[in-house]
Image (cartoon, rainbow over all chains, first blue to last red; front, side, top):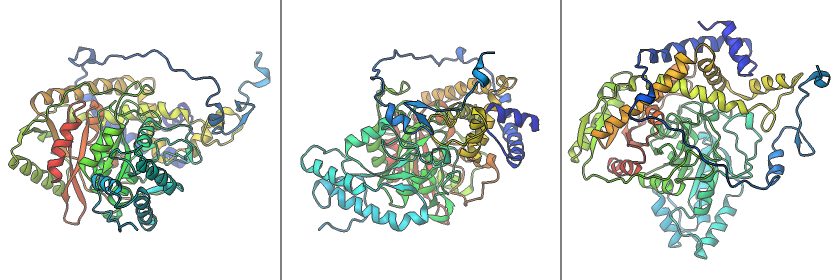
Length: 99
Length: 471
């Protein structure tokens, strides 16, 4: 059941502000989409490790680093607000955050 | 004075020969396309931006062709680029308000390769926002119209690229395909579209949607054109650790064993689509190919599986759009409210819907029933393919269950829209390559097409059989 509480919780987790109309719409949409995708519950739930084609993780070592500040100017130019080569955001901790 | 170039008749080979033999220059060709774009794009909305330096690019390429510096098959070829692929110094928006003013700070690897090959970038093409959709109706900048019927969608998400090629607004184009976003619009617009093997083409510099699915691929008027672009953009790239060179030797058989998953084709397919598919099968048979009925027992769950995994990846990938480092920022009372307002205002309806759904399937209490299970199921779907490819060389289905639908027709029912992906998503789940080829039209003149799927790195099988179908 997708109720108001679920929608509010999802919007909160996803950090998205939604209008009342959007909430009502998504409540309806999620119900019907989840009803459809829930059919995977009928399928076999075999452990992929037991298949003949298991997935393996591939790792690589870090290399080819570039000199610091090579791209700083171009990248900072895309930030909404900057100051002295820093990106500006609002203060996170109130009153110095000593508590 | 150059001849008048007939864009409808032109393919990569004839365009390349025209330039090489001096019948026309890259500048002449670019000029012809710009003229066509000027008259047609206001109707089609295939391009979000036509670059202002097209003729300068062409002049430079003409010089390099003259000096012998450039001679490959793509030298001087005008190409359209989907608006989620970065070209340094140019705007790239993923058709979202979130990135309305974003300038790419570097070239995608595919762009670098195309630049070295001497292409002319005409502009960036329309798409569903962040590649989420099957009609370009989710673009923040209005839908692309189908050149065969302006009341209908061009498909999506690479609808602008497909519409541009079909309407002669570009000779070839790049798109991206996460669940069918190259093949479905190619089918709706009557052009050829390739979703390469996962990892065959670098995604470095491509705006991510669902990273275990996304692939870049070409759209063109012919299989040969698509093949030529693919051979330039493919290959391992140190900036994309999922990319690799093919280690497979493909032998092209004289006659193909072609698998048809009859059970999978039973429901919800338009009658004319099915009739066209049957005609294609008869053609293939009379050309000497062998049709084999195959069983893909888990394909029935493929679409459900895809919409769980893809939305989960979308919700993670799009977390980066928070109004801090790039893109839109909406100011709130504190930093957290900045996030909420920015994402609420910057993302469109479908993007928010998918983020919400992806958040749900990953959230505590539901992860096990949805995300974990879908991941296991994905491996079973891959196994279905690998088992089938022990019996057959390729598999064919229609590309889409219907021809292009009317603009607005599916807009109120997201599930109905998702069902258009039913034949295309399995290839993305398994990472195998698939090619959409036009195979005729319905009674009202809308293009229909079939999809050929091959084993991993079996693109040459697709090109070989695809060429027979377009003949």
